[in-house]
Image (cartoon, rainbow, N blue to C red):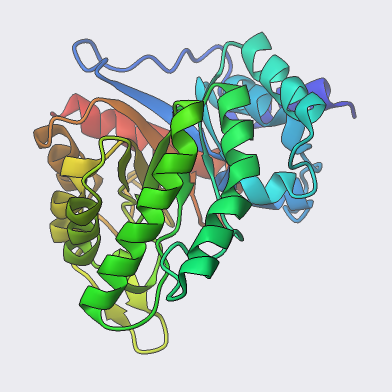
Length: 303
């Protein structure tokens, strides 16, 4: 089966048909995007009964199988392509060919922004530079980074703020924002990350609040209140990640209140993309994505 037939088959299997995915009238201040992590098992060829999806076809899949017009790339699916302009030109061509906007690149595996030694923080900036170039080439508005560090609460704030300022300087020639997701460790503490944003105090440095990532320490089970965390991070948000894990028979996410969270998002004055990020195992990628998208749309309709 070729890639176009595969994507058409996924759309048919999901029941999307000619679904346009329009938001309710008056709520068009929000748009819906798709985080590439949602299709990780399709990219890895690990979803039972589904053909492997080429990362180059991600935008086409988002549009044709899910009715979603914005994509958030994950750099790990393009490792080894750093600096390959032809590859990212092809990725851009395919996205533009189906009317999909490239929103951001999520960057992992590039080192800790808040390393204790300045030389290591500088090395982290260098590792992000190829992804800054790729993001600019694709027409994204941001790269998403991780604010990892070590030390006391305040020491980590100071180190992360310095690393983010350095990254912002590197991103300036590309006209890009640098945004931080709550992604484990102290970054999943809303007060800590909000404090980092205040220390950096740069208009091009912000947050990507994730509905689900409020586990500070998996071993100890330490967590942060997600609703408080969203309230603390939304004033700095340049994107929003609507993570989902499981749904009940009524199409509601079983681990978090999307309606409450979307009200926090709206009350903060946020305007822009809300990114679907399906992280569950069952159902499969396409159905999980469509359930998440439908729930976001219902939550928006209630605002």
